[in-house]
Image (cartoon, rainbow, N blue to C red; front, side, top):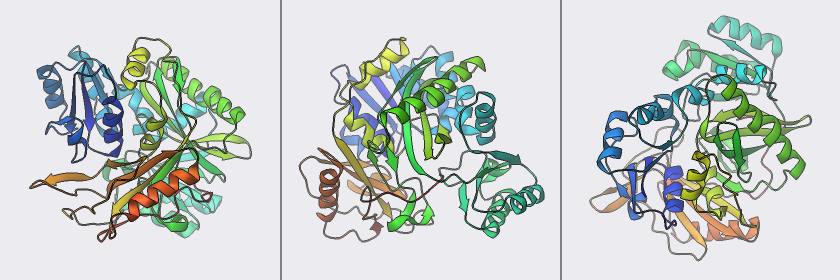
Length: 422
């Protein structure tokens, strides 16, 4: 088969890496890809938001299957366009992707279908939102309604912080159209975990659990990011809690989307939190999570091409998982998630057995790999347990000697992360 992966980040490199292991792949393409993906797929310089260009590319290369990584093209209708041209794509339609594209839609949907989540209200008027916060008090969570690259969520520990967040979003328009509406939620205490599933209509096939670390610095300090590291599985989640999450959250969501005339095909990601009342939904994504994908896919025993084709054909892919732990640590550009410099030469990491390096924000510049984003690399490893996996990852990171211009957390997976609601 000829396969196309749309996107340019660490998630897409991880997908490409898994696909490249398959004997079913003839040609593997990535659009636009990145400096690391070049080693395993042919990178074609078509932007992920150039839907017409991607359709033409799929036709020109006689692509049999397209997998879409990032959320923005999904919400722009890439799947709808591919369907109109008779092209096979594993990704939700624009109508189904609204589950991630609008937090207010997602909250109303969960309320309608009795899916456990935090109590909330939605606002477009800043003064009304502030009045609500004054009544409810803190801690409280303020979310931009639309897509904001993982940065449109503020966990306010004081009412002043919440009011500042409302001003940023509704008055100063820090997130442009994504922040013209805000969702204000109750703060949920507990430990977060992520649960992804391959979905087609009513058929839901869940993956192993994972947990990511959102805060920029050690000890879960600093601003929220798109994720500074992750590990899988989240071994404090019991079989009973997992079964509840699959039944009351993933399956109800798939069934509800079908009921709404928004039948879901692709990857459904539930960002969950384990509260005293059980698992509750913090957010939905309608694609592979990043950086969770980088630690979940290495544990999948199955051929990913076969899994996707089985799911598309309505068959059970009979997922099998390695009884191991996988851990990954993000190497980010100095200054991330704020402003940072591009074009900085990457550190020279040495080979470490059983460890791997996933490229996210990288590109080739005159044959040399340089940083081209905030999250640049993910150092990962798979081992018998989390301690061994972490040891391998930090051995790989230390092998460069210097990581000037970059930073990474020293405590991924090392201890329980504190209460978060992102």
